Length: 130
Ligand SMILES: [Zn+2]
Image (cartoon, rainbow, N blue to C red; front, side, top):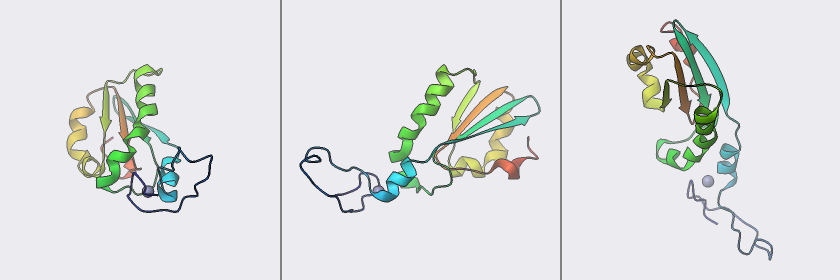
């Protein structure tokens, strides 16, 4: 079989039970998809930044990120229908993380912010900004 995410070929056992239900993901991609999301709340001077990392410390290359966007679904549902009302909801990747100190000055004027990313980013290096 061919993984629909990474395109790698992987062995799959075909039986009468799996005749019409093919394996879609290789073992490596299954591990990434099975990761539980992490949640952090980071207070700053006039608000609260909630940060959700969908797949934790797994490495996902930029060109493959689009295949993992389905992981945002649960967090978006929580953001829209959950108990907290967010003023700003942002998706970030490596580029936005590297430029965090540049753009956060403008966003921090809002009270409650939700950041989401596929992989985990450590915001402790930006604590001086908060
Ligand atoms: Zn794969």
